[in-house]
Every structure is written in structure tokens, then in C-alpha cells.
Length: 125
Image (cartoon, rainbow, N blue to C red):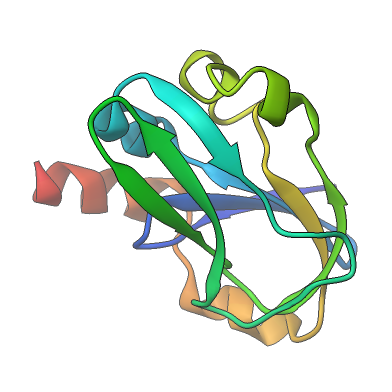
């Protein structure tokens, strides 16, 4: 059974066991506009919670993608290199950025659930 969490930097992480799948939220892609380039971490990279994990470039701006939790990158979504527009079309589904093996599952306690994230976005609007 998986559970999804959200960061204040507008990343989502879906956790199943000790593996987290990470991407940017629909709110983030709406703010960015048309995504034209995605830079992903490398498999084997060790990421720290809150550390830069990649970059998303749109016609309007470039934005860093941060690791919502610490861990080692186990897989990246190579489809995004050829089709960065997936981030606009399916931000919280097919356009995941990378997967990592959590090094400290307690860090999930720093993140929001869907209801808290929805309120957070509403308060920012």
C-alpha cells in the first residue's frame, strides 16, 4: 500500500515500502507553464532532504527540484528527456522524475498529506 506526501517546494513523493517515487505537483506545473527541459539526478546519487535533485525549465522560468526526503536514487524517468511536456500533461502520474531508497523514513513526518497540501496551495494563491 502506497502513501503520497507533499513538500512546501511542490514536490510529491509516493512511498511504497522503502522506495519513494518523486515528481512535481500539478500546482507547480501550472506555475511553470510549458515545460521544455528536465534535468534529472543520476542513478546512484545520494540526495539530502531539501537538497537540489534536478531542474525543470519552462518557457517562463527555470526551477529547481528538491528531494523531499534523503536517500539514494535507484531509477530515473528517461522518458522526460525526450518528452518534457509530460510534466504538464501528467504531473502526478506518468511524469515522475526519479525513485529513491529512503535513508530516513522519519523525514516523511516533515511533509504534508493531500489535505494539508491543498490548504497550503490555497493559502499561497
